[in-house]
Image (cartoon, rainbow, N blue to C red; front, side, top):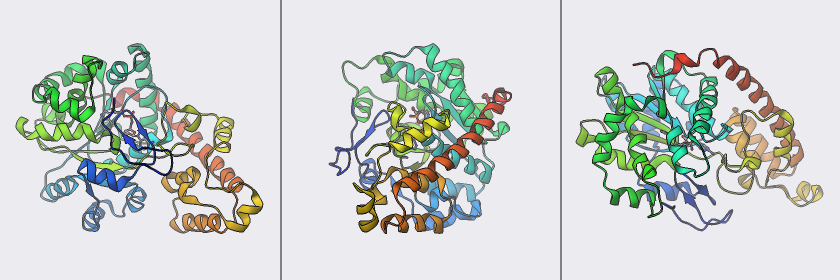
Length: 382
Ligand code: TYM
């Protein structure tokens, strides 16, 4: 099933970006044009900076690079209308470090704007779209993935996790209002549904839309939702935005991030390719082995690399420094320079990332373990 954005990439072939599949070299400029989103402008970032003291690293580096209506949300905020955050996870398996990218930024927004987060755990979605998966499995992963979410540091009093199959009564009336206003023709052209698609999947987009509007039902306040997520989820928001005002709500706003790549060439880190993904539960030796096999921008031999240098722009390891593991801009540019100049070889760079990754994961797992005692505090409060 493909709602594709197509282009011939030089690295990994044709670009495909859908909520269910991302492959090829992702051309983000092209996605902005084809999806009809807006780039983040300096003026908008100056406004964001007013409320966040300092721009978050993910904004500074344009890891978050595009939006819809972020300007409207900030203007409303300036005039005294708050907003809520909404994001989610399809619990089909363990969490990888790519999933943490939008969650880390969402936590930053929760803290800076002191605002509520609705988090949808879509065990129903993953059950419907995967022929092999049982509901019991996706429910089990909901619990496991919630521990990872909590480990990122969200505030319990302001975090409302909705476990779809358990909490559907909360979403159901809003879902019906949404579903009634989206035609099959719109859904088919947006998501690429086919005759063989099961009807649960066809109905599913209405369920992912519902949390955009749930705040009014729970509190009586009509405020916009701002959704931080990678750009693969954007098709959902396109159909939701079309019907929001008909139902008396604000259009949900988005801020989109890039994909943390996998350890291979091209595409995103994806749980369906475990050998090129780093999961939060990967043991130190597993991390080391995966990094050792990673695709880099290195040359055939060490001698050649010392002489000619390497290319960090195609290197998956460099991207991990860029996204998560080298916060200092000077350190990052120094690493890039040494790589290009052939002063630092891939082995050294890989050793560094293994050590940084394992340290990060160890702390994450300690927090994840503690989350077991407090997970109930994060369940949607009615
Ligand atoms: P899922 O489980 O595919 O992804 C969870 C979140 O992680 C983002 N993401 C990534 N971000 C950076 N690099 C990557 N390699 C990467 N892979 C995934 C996704 O964009 C997403 O933000 N249908 C959704 C669940 C959902 C949801 C939402 C997501 C329900 N409501 C609202 C975002 C916002 C899903 O299956 O996500």
